[in-house]
Image 1 (tube, rainbow, N blue to C red):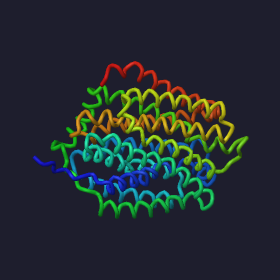
Image 2: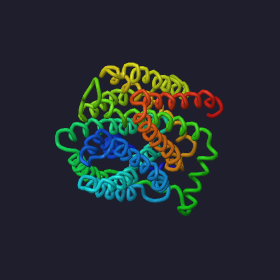
Image 3: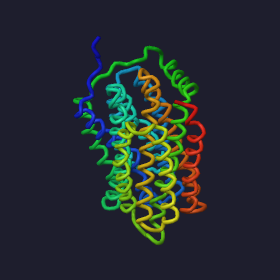
Image 4: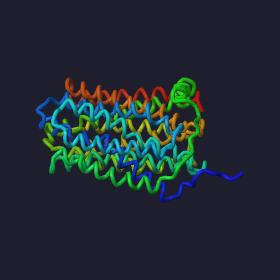
Length: 391
């Protein structure tokens, strides 16, 4: 019997990697721009920080509502509809003059920007077993580089051309990406024939019954919570002594993180020599070491840069291993497995943003780093206790 699924060619894999970075960037453009938005609307830092939090909550909601449909309907059609809505929302963000409206738009941008999480299950399904972890790692590197580069680009553009122009540029990028998706993306057959209700029930079933997925989801959530806590508040930290820096400098720290993300792309190759749990253990330890630099050396550019390289390298390596582990459970339910994991991941990010904002308001940079350290410790403890009990 011949395999009827489309081949994952190198050009398609590269396109999915680049598109993943461009699309996920929509969620993070706002972070280095928060100070500029606050000044434009004359509001407090604590109020403007909710924009970043609501975007991540919207993303988590989109993962729960939209991504499971990747197992039930045409992924290509679902992706194109989401892209169209995202373009409308980016234009709305660029033109909004009433600040509370930014809360709703930011949530909605997060909701519709979940498309990369339809790409990842597609890559898992279309890859051969021997290349699956490496291919997932490549696409996920595109995702993390998109996150980090978006902060760099938006910081520079916001500082020199105004924060609204960043969202006009994002609209143009999404228009070009949508056209290419229509031309290039292969069709894949749905794997689920039941109702939407039964589809969501099966997501909950996986969440309750798969310990491998549960552990991976918790590790991912705690890791991303720590990164979100520190990056959301980095722009405020850099505005104070001894830096007195603008939004463009905060965005440039995306370059430091991109170094770690690119290095982590090779994590999939390490599975030839080490067990995945061993790689995850080392990744979490690297994240813990990163806090030494961001906290104790957090008043220097060098300390912050090293810290961000390490935290992004560790988080991305753990993220790739997490997905490789749970995708092997049931390849006919990749979208639903990814839903459980990524909903947990971005709930963790939202929690990190929320607690990080509170910590910044009351305890400054020390409080933010304390929040991040504790999230990392939770990931390490859970992994140490349960890694031997799940396969």
